[in-house]
Image 1 (cartoon, rainbow, N blue to C red):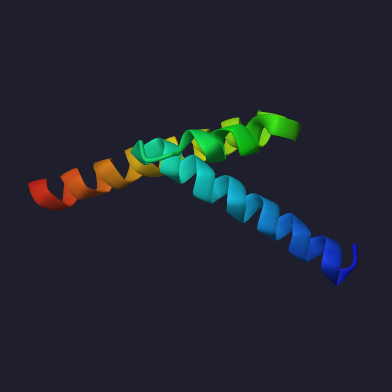
Image 2 (cartoon, one colour):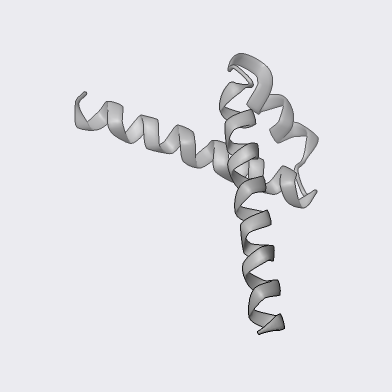
Amino acid sequence: MNGNAATKGWRKWLRIAKSTGAAFLGVQSSKVLEEDFQGSSPLPFIIMGLLLTVAFVVSLVVIVNIVLN
């Protein structure tokens, strides 16, 4: 994989993370939503959504443990 392809891959995942994060917070616009699902598979968005959910739950557990101790 050359440098240009690697950069494209990271940009794609960064865009997916940004889009999923905005949707996770409820601030996703319908225009961006249509652009995201226009030509790509929903699988990367599902994976990113699951990762964000796990990160959210873990952060809540850590915060609660800190507060209770």
